Image (cartoon, rainbow, N blue to C red; front, top):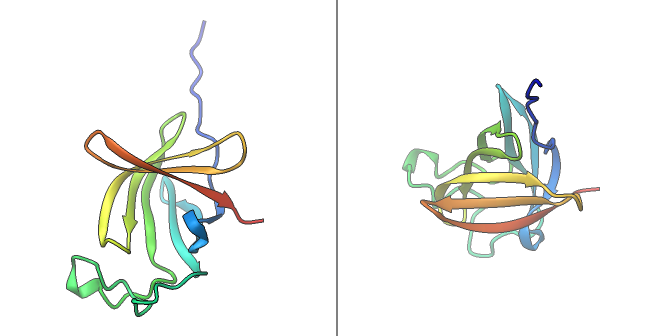
Length: 124
């Protein structure tokens, strides 16, 4: 009996981040998907609207709107695996994305074996 490969549930579209701070648009890029902040709904009162915590000084003036935060995500069969950038911390993490049966997007950022999970809601 042949084995069939399973594809992860598509995750393209617009997503409202945890606490409704921003909208991230996920779209195809290369062989996978990537995501950018396309709208800030709750600006950081201490911030200046730029990527000021980036560890690379040359990137600290990038506007938050348009900032790529999801990169190199590839279909892992049951989920999507790639990298996530947190502009509030200026750090990048290994990440796993999975569309849940309720339509929400489970977003995990991981260091070694420890992962933190958020739920993002679809923008309707």
